[in-house]
Length: 305
Ligand SMILES: [Zn+2]
Image (cartoon, rainbow, N blue to C red):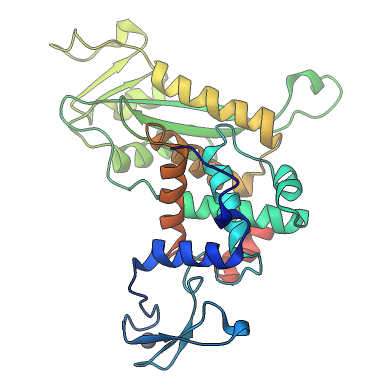
């Protein structure tokens, strides 16, 4: 099922509230402070969505303990923004979100980053690969335009490494520089050792490729495996992921600051990992990621920097 943006949950605050409460608690509102279900809904219009816990006597709403907690953005706009971001293949700029939601640019920008935070890890953190599975690893560089190079100092490009299990999930990372030393910890903690690792022929992969069941490279002279002739030696899967990522960088975000690059990789990983489900189901996965995550003030400051 696709997203129907005329759905009242995107326009009516009471319906949005009911939707989020059902999503989070499935009919049994639970105190996020102490876990008690002995709670009661408070009356009065100014207290819409407010519960009082009979055990710890604290108050809470569906926002408490989520990335929405300190936000003043109405819930129906949160829902609309989450659905739009989940459904937009190349992402959605804060500028466009500002226009679509009727909020300030700053609000839209922060909203988008909080939704990325919700998407981070929402599709699971289990290592990629396994026996008879192939994981492709590769890196790409974003930022910096060659055509300006003659007139300006060259802009430092930012490296992004992606690990993609064929027919499976992707996990991508920003790294300060691409060396065996920076790459090895990422690869060995995110890919199981019984995996067939496929990379290009870069020497940094050769250093630790032997720690895996087998390591192939797109340069056939470097093949280090036997009995796997049925597997195709290519890194098309990871290259396809990068092409979507780069269309997002160029077409939507233009410039990703280094400080926030990890959030953008989370966003693109999330959409790739949910590519086989509908836009609506994908948005529901993102909404579940909202619960239990929250940007603290410290991280908020880091974000704003
Ligand atoms: Zn409580």
